[in-house]
Length: 128
Length: 240
Image (cartoon, rainbow over all chains, first blue to last red; front, side, top):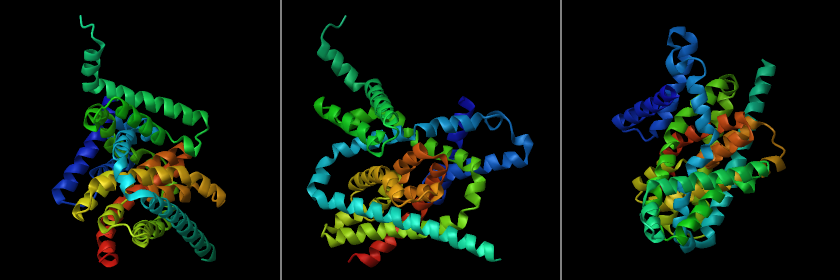
């Protein structure tokens, strides 16, 4: 458990160091995600890597535990929004309306593009 | 022994223990209600936890920074949880690998739509320029969005508000919207909510379906990269 959490933190730390060091405009944890993914894939190829948190279900079960409660982790930031209600009140209903419509349009465009692209791709494969 | 309840309260309300406990307790109840309603979209545990705790802070006249001293332990886990997304991604790698192309096309279309739609709509209803700039990165995860907002000399705290509200709106609307459109492909549903509503959308996707959660996580990560390049561009061309 502790070894698995350490591995996760270590990946994040490496990601943060990489991003800060190179001045890249991306979040460090995303690089950490890629590092952990590469480690998991490498373990399948090189069995000698399967030790500590990378053996059995170590880092996997720790990760599942974290992700099972992903919603909880947004609560502290969410409470900050309630504290800033005056900002929303100042800009009124237009602010909320614009956000809702934009979210709905984004959902529809993304899902339609995804489905269209995967359908075209499948048709291309059937023809060849 | 201290018999004055008020001084006990003063002591406890200043310690991280109380607010960490309140955060976990309120969430546990909100999550139980969400489960009890079979994960009904409007029983979103983030939404209900945040307003209940917000009201509680107001009633007890507690500042957000005092609250955050306790809640920061929960907030901190956002980073490790992002790293942890590698595990479901690894376990579903075959499904993901076979959908690389649709993902890239949908990423391009979705991230452009997310920025364009909010900038154009906000301009159409006549919101002030500074507000529009603060809203532009609203579909990416809060840390990245606030960074973008800062680099545009907008208001990062207004950006954070827009980001959280967007996440909650996406998490609430995605299931009824997709069901009404008869979309049953959970890869596409997850990817869309990850693009439109970042981590809060991803958390919702994991509640509904694991594959949807995986695709939402990928979409959220990729969108953070694309949007940080896209917003400065869009703002330069669209706003003058």
